[in-house]
Amino acid sequence: MIPYEELSKEELLEIKSDLDAQFEAIKAKGLNLDMSRGKPSTEQLNLSMEMMDVLTSESDLVCEEGVDCRNYGVLDGIKEAKQLLADMMEVPKDNIVIFGNSSLNIMYDTIARSMTHGVMGSTPWCKLDKVKFLCPVPGYDRHFAITEYFGIEMINIPMTPTGPDMDLVEKYVNNDPAVKGIWCVPKYSNPQGITYSDVTVHRFAALKPAAEDFRIFWDNAYGIHHLYEDKQDYLIEILMECKKEGNPDMVYKFSSTSKISFPGSGIGAIAASDANLEDIRKQMRIQTIGHDKLNQLRHARYFKDIHGMVQHMKRHADILRPKFDMVLSSLDRELSGLGIGSWMAPRGGYFISFDSMEGCAKAIVAKAKEAGLVMTNAGATFPYGKDPKDSNIRIAPSYPTVEELKTACEIFTLSVKLVSIDKLLS
Ligand code: PLP
Image 1 (cartoon, rainbow, N blue to C red):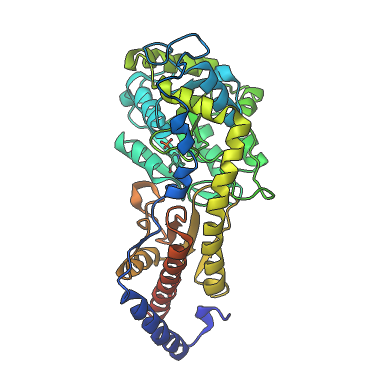
Image 2 (image 1 turned 180 degrees about the horizontal axis):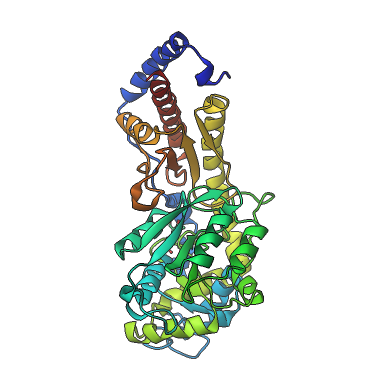
């Protein structure tokens, strides 16, 4: 493959006319495809259907505490669900609080509480002139939406293959008391699929924040979401690492079973130090009498233990792997060596991140739409929806079928080529 940049104007025009014809042919099919949604397919949801039969009208619905799960009681999660989620999150059972159906909801509550009541006795953020958050980019749009909603200033921190640029993180966190937090997706990150290296995690744990109420928001949404049995990433457990470094209170860890059982009907949890959890429970006691214990019981009885969950994740991987392989092989075949885009092959998670030539992402997404393919909006992976280079595009292969992905990738790679040629000709 000769990089497009090395081709003459005439050569580019010749390629373009051929690609235009291919694009028009595929457009004429009137397709309706979607690679924007990071959600499990129906086939994946079907894997957990037996969970529906775990609790019946005949079941004993008393949990290990001896409480009837149909009634009020047990504020922060029944024992058996805590054990399951604690093992999943690699923390002691006593360092976990179970909430409702969504971890994003817990993150929102955590920021809201910090705004109105402060963190462990410190000044509520709403009373401060300025509150800032560090945002590794590209990242998860819903994280950025929460901090934007509360008027928190967001600072882009570039991602590297080993995690966020830690020189920058240290510079901001250790010197600026207005920096109160950082969003992290440390394993199989959304959207790049990057797992933070040991050095990165050590450097996080050893931060010396200028603000006493600085917290790392460690969203381990994809902790056990591997794609391969023989190639898996390993992430150092952050709570223990922070404790070792004398910073036991510096981190909140979040996770859920959304992409293990049912998104929107799973269980979400937070793990943190005793002191942080006490702070959280103070609010929780006012907020609720308790979350959905029947769902907690259903999950605990269905998976039995972490081994059951790990086996279950292998079945998810068997469905997801061919889809990721389809996208990656298309990108490789169609775009490798052309110098018009780059991407990484993740070992887990839900996304593939694509970087086009600068200034092309919006146009590529629009071009793909013309032929009936919906992609995540360009810019969505950056705070305020603004990608300074206009180059990042998130690809979500989980929901369409392998056949649909094949066509979707054809449209996508054609769009990348056509927009890149236009850029080079302009
Ligand atoms: N965190 C990350 C990084 C995600 O990608 C997602 C969903 O895509 C969520 C959280 C949502 O989690 P939940 O369903 O537990 O709210």
